[in-house]
Amino acid sequence: MTTTGPTPAPALRGERPYKVPRHPAPIDLWLHANEGPPPPAALYDALAARGPELLQRYPAGTAAVEAALAERLGVAPTRVLVTAGGDDALDRAFRAFLWPGREVVLPVPTFVMLERYARLAGATVRTIPWPGGPWPLDAALAAIGPDTGAVAVVSPNNPTGAVITGAALRELAAAAPGAAILCDLAYAEFADEDLTAVALELDNALVFRTLSKAWGLAGARVGYVVGPEPLVAVLRAAGNPYSVSAPSAALALAHLASGEPQMARYCDRVRAERGALRGLLVDLGVDCPESQGNFVLARFRAPARALWLRDALAALGIGVRAFPGEPHLEDAVRVTCPGDAAALDRVLRAVRAALAPTALIVDDLFALEAVDGAAAWFFSADPAALAAARAMGAVPIALDPAPESAPAALQSASARVVPHPDALEEVLP
Image 1: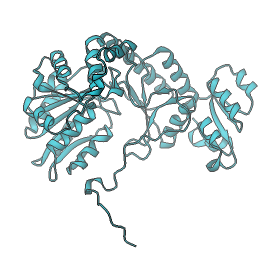
Image 2 (image 1 turned 90 degrees about the vertical axis):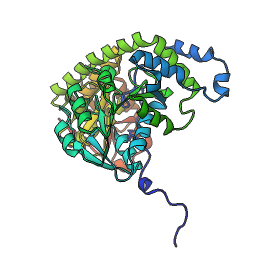
Image 3 (image 1 turned 180 degrees about the vertical axis):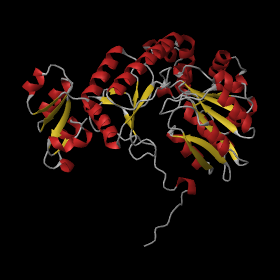
Image 4 (image 1 turned 90 degrees about the horizontal axis):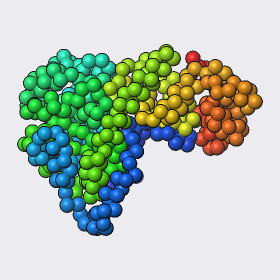
């Protein structure tokens, strides 16, 4: 029987919604999405002061936020466009400057949505490898041709934390005067150098920033793009009216006015935490390049080891980002810096327990208590015993003769369900 009905556009066939694969264990410390610090509770006063009309009426616009950002950047407000997160601005740019027959040069691995935006625009994606280290300028210059409509530059790069230099950015823009240089600087606050000023000197560059990371307003979905007025005007026309809600705009304006000291303290804290996290991982034999984002990327000798770290930390209530099935990243785990001393200590202890256990204990809570907080794995078929082990900082691992059909209580209480302890040899140090 033939099924009839609407046919999706070719660019959407086979596409699936963006979704991060996660372990079923309950998480209370979320370090998987590179979100920033919690904003001050007093920020909500900005909403209360505006009254119910803030919700009743369509947004009056984002002109006040754009003016505040323009003043910070030293540019005219017409060069700034506030959008529903940086993602909205990037999507507009890909649709504005790419179409079938046009190409985008994209170093990979990078922000996963960029390649999707390009495909949805009908463009050809020319990927070049950038596993880390210096930005691949020579490869990018070689990839630029007459059909190049855009070159994407994410710096610090997500998920590697690597960066481009100002000199390389200038050379790139000069080599592709007819292409849009899309500079995603979402993590610029954490970098050694903020390249916004360099990019704003270029006639063909657009800078994408966000209040979701260092400013801690991920839930408000407020981003912005800044660049030459003619290019920004195109992006204004490429999006929906009222794309940023009135409450989000009000929160952004209030936070920009008073939140910079908190933001600066958080960034200083993150820079210190990056060193501590990377130092531990390197000491444990993990490949962990230096990062200039609010995260570190750990690379393992096999994808199974990467998934083990994600699962073991999840069993201890800590969510981190693994990349199963993603090219270039199957062996990697990204850990966001928590920006809090107690949380960092918890993460460091959990990483050590996951990757360097000094004790493997089977169903003996007294033995676990005897090791007194040392890094340990604890095996049991009892959900209550697994919960007790988790509370003591040991990685809980469930025992069940049929792991694939184990009860949900066991699956959510443990890093893994295995038939016997030896089944985890692939992830043992």
